Figure 1 (cartoon, rainbow, N blue to C red):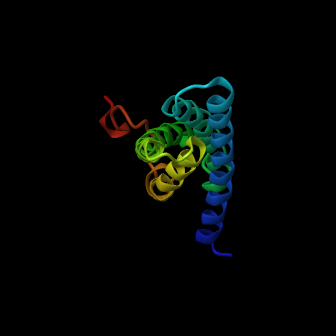
Figure 2: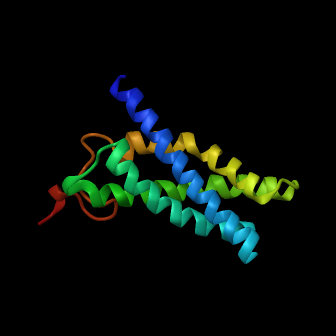
Length: 142
Protein backbone atom coordinates (compact mmCIF):
# COMPACT_ATOMS: atom_id res chain seq x y z
CA UNK A 1 0.00 0.00 0.00
CA UNK A 2 1.39 3.40 -0.94
CA UNK A 3 1.80 6.15 1.65
CA UNK A 4 -1.00 8.13 0.02
CA UNK A 5 -3.37 5.13 0.08
CA UNK A 6 -2.47 4.41 3.72
CA UNK A 7 -3.10 8.03 4.66
CA UNK A 8 -6.47 8.01 2.88
CA UNK A 9 -7.46 4.74 4.59
CA UNK A 10 -6.47 6.08 8.01
CA UNK A 11 -8.34 9.32 7.30
CA UNK A 12 -11.49 7.33 6.55
CA UNK A 13 -11.02 5.18 9.67
CA UNK A 14 -10.41 8.11 12.03
CA UNK A 15 -13.08 10.28 10.41
CA UNK A 16 -15.54 7.40 10.46
CA UNK A 17 -15.04 6.89 14.18
CA UNK A 18 -15.28 10.67 14.65
CA UNK A 19 -18.56 10.64 12.72
CA UNK A 20 -19.84 7.90 15.03
CA UNK A 21 -18.88 10.02 18.06
CA UNK A 22 -20.54 13.07 16.48
CA UNK A 23 -23.77 11.22 15.67
CA UNK A 24 -23.94 9.56 19.11
CA UNK A 25 -23.56 12.90 20.90
CA UNK A 26 -26.01 14.52 18.46
CA UNK A 27 -28.63 11.78 18.97
CA UNK A 28 -28.27 11.93 22.75
CA UNK A 29 -28.72 15.70 22.80
CA UNK A 30 -31.60 15.56 20.29
CA UNK A 31 -33.58 12.59 21.63
CA UNK A 32 -32.80 12.66 25.36
CA UNK A 33 -32.06 16.30 26.16
CA UNK A 34 -34.32 17.78 23.46
CA UNK A 35 -32.03 20.55 22.23
CA UNK A 36 -32.58 22.16 18.80
CA UNK A 37 -30.70 20.42 15.95
CA UNK A 38 -28.25 23.29 15.30
CA UNK A 39 -27.28 23.38 19.00
CA UNK A 40 -26.90 19.59 19.03
CA UNK A 41 -24.67 19.84 15.96
CA UNK A 42 -22.42 22.50 17.47
CA UNK A 43 -21.89 20.55 20.69
CA UNK A 44 -21.38 17.25 18.83
CA UNK A 45 -18.85 19.06 16.62
CA UNK A 46 -16.77 20.12 19.63
CA UNK A 47 -16.61 16.57 21.01
CA UNK A 48 -15.84 15.00 17.61
CA UNK A 49 -13.27 17.68 16.72
CA UNK A 50 -11.26 16.85 19.85
CA UNK A 51 -11.44 13.15 18.95
CA UNK A 52 -10.42 13.72 15.34
CA UNK A 53 -7.53 16.12 15.91
CA UNK A 54 -5.99 13.74 18.42
CA UNK A 55 -6.27 10.62 16.28
CA UNK A 56 -5.45 12.27 12.94
CA UNK A 57 -2.27 13.69 14.45
CA UNK A 58 -1.28 10.29 15.87
CA UNK A 59 -2.41 7.92 13.13
CA UNK A 60 -3.29 9.60 9.86
CA UNK A 61 -0.63 12.24 9.50
CA UNK A 62 1.78 11.19 12.28
CA UNK A 63 2.26 14.75 13.40
CA UNK A 64 4.16 15.33 16.57
CA UNK A 65 7.01 17.33 17.91
CA UNK A 66 7.36 21.06 18.06
CA UNK A 67 4.69 21.83 15.46
CA UNK A 68 1.95 19.73 17.10
CA UNK A 69 0.21 22.64 18.81
CA UNK A 70 0.27 24.72 15.63
CA UNK A 71 -1.26 21.82 13.71
CA UNK A 72 -3.99 21.40 16.30
CA UNK A 73 -4.88 25.08 15.96
CA UNK A 74 -5.00 24.80 12.17
CA UNK A 75 -7.16 21.67 12.44
CA UNK A 76 -9.67 23.47 14.67
CA UNK A 77 -9.75 26.42 12.24
CA UNK A 78 -10.34 24.08 9.28
CA UNK A 79 -12.95 22.05 11.16
CA UNK A 80 -14.80 25.20 12.19
CA UNK A 81 -14.92 26.27 8.54
CA UNK A 82 -16.27 22.88 7.47
CA UNK A 83 -18.79 23.04 10.33
CA UNK A 84 -20.47 25.90 8.46
CA UNK A 85 -21.06 23.55 5.50
CA UNK A 86 -22.40 20.90 7.86
CA UNK A 87 -24.79 23.37 9.53
CA UNK A 88 -26.11 24.65 6.18
CA UNK A 89 -26.85 21.12 4.95
CA UNK A 90 -28.35 20.13 8.31
CA UNK A 91 -30.59 23.18 8.38
CA UNK A 92 -31.77 22.76 4.77
CA UNK A 93 -32.53 19.07 5.16
CA UNK A 94 -34.23 19.49 8.55
CA UNK A 95 -36.46 22.20 7.06
CA UNK A 96 -37.30 19.78 4.23
CA UNK A 97 -38.50 17.22 6.77
CA UNK A 98 -35.48 14.91 6.99
CA UNK A 99 -34.95 13.51 10.48
CA UNK A 100 -32.31 15.48 12.41
CA UNK A 101 -29.82 12.63 12.84
CA UNK A 102 -29.96 11.75 9.13
CA UNK A 103 -29.63 15.44 8.22
CA UNK A 104 -26.60 15.67 10.53
CA UNK A 105 -25.00 12.63 8.87
CA UNK A 106 -25.53 14.20 5.43
CA UNK A 107 -24.00 17.46 6.65
CA UNK A 108 -20.92 15.66 7.95
CA UNK A 109 -20.48 13.75 4.68
CA UNK A 110 -20.81 16.93 2.63
CA UNK A 111 -17.92 18.55 4.50
CA UNK A 112 -15.61 15.51 4.54
CA UNK A 113 -13.80 16.07 1.20
CA UNK A 114 -12.88 19.65 2.13
CA UNK A 115 -11.72 18.50 5.55
CA UNK A 116 -9.48 15.83 4.02
CA UNK A 117 -7.90 18.15 1.46
CA UNK A 118 -7.40 20.90 4.01
CA UNK A 119 -5.89 18.46 6.47
CA UNK A 120 -3.53 17.00 3.90
CA UNK A 121 -2.46 20.26 2.27
CA UNK A 122 -2.50 22.72 5.15
CA UNK A 123 -2.94 21.25 8.62
CA UNK A 124 -0.63 18.24 8.49
CA UNK A 125 1.38 19.01 5.34
CA UNK A 126 4.99 18.01 5.57
CA UNK A 127 7.06 21.11 5.98
CA UNK A 128 4.19 22.96 7.68
CA UNK A 129 5.57 25.88 9.60
CA UNK A 130 6.05 25.30 13.31
CA UNK A 131 4.32 28.52 14.25
CA UNK A 132 0.82 29.40 15.34
CA UNK A 133 -1.74 30.42 12.73
CA UNK A 134 -2.02 33.83 14.38
CA UNK A 135 1.09 35.79 15.14
CA UNK A 136 4.36 36.63 13.45
CA UNK A 137 6.51 34.09 11.69
CA UNK A 138 9.75 33.19 13.44
CA UNK A 139 11.75 35.21 10.91
CA UNK A 140 9.71 38.29 11.87
CA UNK A 141 10.68 38.00 15.53
CA UNK A 142 12.98 40.72 16.92
